[in-house]
Length: 286
Image (cartoon, rainbow, N blue to C red; front, side, top):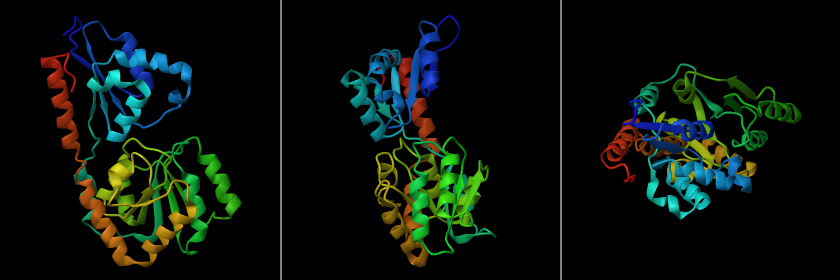
C-alpha cells in the first residue's frame, strides 16, 4: 500500500492507461486490460517505443482473448509475456437467458439486427450491400451511434434502401431487441472479444458474423461465419437462414450453448484471483 492507501490501480483504454502510468503514486501496482487486436497507434512506428515504456509501468496486462494477447505480444515483444495473461470478458447471462425464454409480441423473423457502434472498425457497409441480394421483405436494423453513420446513411440512399433499413440509435433494451429479431449480425474488420456477439448468442437468436480474429475464437462452431467484407457470401448465409426455420433453431441452440462460457461471474473471479496474486507477491503477475 502506498501513502495514499491505494494498492492496485486498474486502467482500461489508451487515455486511461497513459494517465495512470504518469500519475500513479510510487508503490502502486498497476494493472491494465487490453481489449482489441488492433488500434491506430500500432500503425505509427514512432509510437512503438513510447508504448513499450508505457506498458513497462504495468505489473499485469490482462487481455480479453487469446487473439488480443497474441497481437499485443507481437507488437510489444516477448519481454512482456510474463506479465500478460488472458481473462475473457463476460456478460450477465441471466439477462439474455430471460429474454430468450419468452416469445416477444413483436418478433420479426425477416429482420436482421446489427448491434455495433458506427466506427471504422465495424463493417456496416458489407451488411448493407448484402441486403439487396435478399428477398424484398427482408429488413436490416442498425442499433448504435457513431462517426461513420452519415456514410452508411448516404449508402442507404444511393442503393435506394430507405424502406428496408432502420437506424435505431442507442438502445437500452438490447436483450429484447435481439430476441425480437430473426437474425443477429456482426459485420466487422477485427475484434478483441465482442460482447455484442456473446449477447446475441445468449439471447437465443442465430448469429452470423465476420470470420476474423477475435470473432472466430468466440463464435466459431456456433455462429455462422462469412469472409470479411464479402457481401455475396454474407447474403448466401442469410438467405439460407431466412428460408430454413430448422437451420435457425439449430444455429440458435449452438449459440446459446457457446455463450454459457462467457459468464460475468467467471470474469470477475479471474480478476479477483489476479489481484490476490499481485498483493501476495507483486513480482508475480501470471
